[in-house]
Image (cartoon, one colour):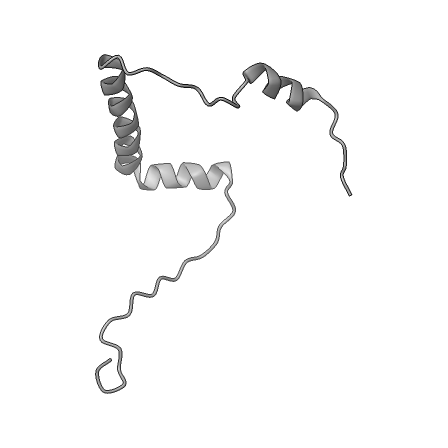
Length: 79
């Protein structure tokens, strides 16, 4: 502090918007290069790992057949 005044203020004000398909399209159109950069980064790293023949380990609790059974089973309400 400098005589009771702030030297620096890093306040960020944001507005909440619903996550609709229209809003997602608008964001993709507003920031197309950022979206492509992220996608490029993910797939280029995946390609490098694949070319190195890195082993792929699935999550031990990830069983697609069990997930399918859970999704079609009737849900029970817990009180």
